[in-house]
Structures are given as C-alpha cells and as structure tokens.
Image (cartoon, rainbow, N blue to C red):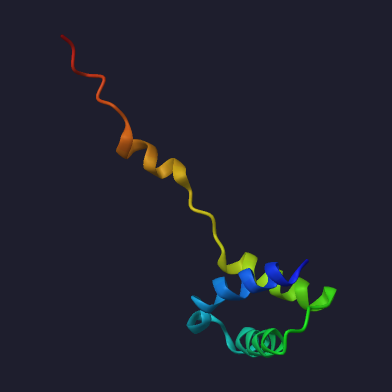
Length: 77
C-alpha cells in the first residue's frame, strides 16, 4: 500500500471518528500521528487500518432503488 492509500483511508475514517469504540479510537489517533509525521505504514499497521476501513465502509445495496425508477407498464394506448 502506498502513502496515497493510507491518506484515503484516514480521510474516510474521519467521518466516523465519533462512532469508533475506545480501542479503535486509540488506534485511529495513532494512525493520525503517524500520518502527520509522514511515516509510511508497515504491513501490520496497514492491515489494521484496512480492517477498520472495511468495517465502516459498507457498500450501498443499489437493488433497493430499482423499484423507484421502474417505468409504468400498466398504461396502454
């Protein structure tokens, strides 16, 4: 992983900072300090960051929106 990826993950997780539990918040603060010092994360730290990102990045189920955008087929000329 690169410096760009870790910056992307940290920017995303800033939105969820209030939802983090105690251990996750401590890890997140450590990640931010490392980012501020411009350190590139090692594999273990990056794995922790990625797992935290995956926990809070839930993809949207777009199949729920299909019913809202269907055409009315009941009308006939």
